[in-house]
Length: 150
Image (cartoon, rainbow, N blue to C red):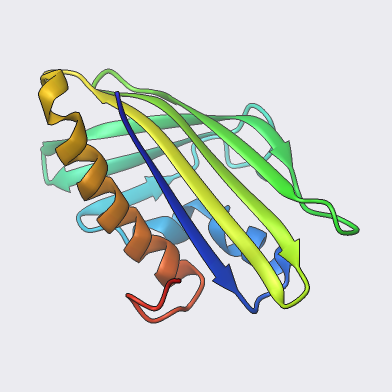
């Protein structure tokens, strides 16, 4: 299993950081060759399922995810979101936590991924690629210049 963690500090209030990083369709604008749909068509909550489709034309794969924890930030409390990856190719979990700070918010994104067909020795490579791709996505969603993280 490949595991990676990304952290960003932003002057955005926790509620705004939360809104941006849990706007699932917005993720696709920052991840190459990916579109995201929310088939349930509902406001995000526990049980919401959305699908990230990565590829070109018929060559690609679906990465369906289900929200299994949904606690938006409120009154100085952190926002906590947990996702379960339920695809036939990509399995695992993701968590997105948004903590209020005196100067804005602190966003922590952790992924635990298993990609079928990839040998275990490739996990460090997958984790490194994930840190780069999702780090850039997080920077874009928080409107931060790439590479400006602490």
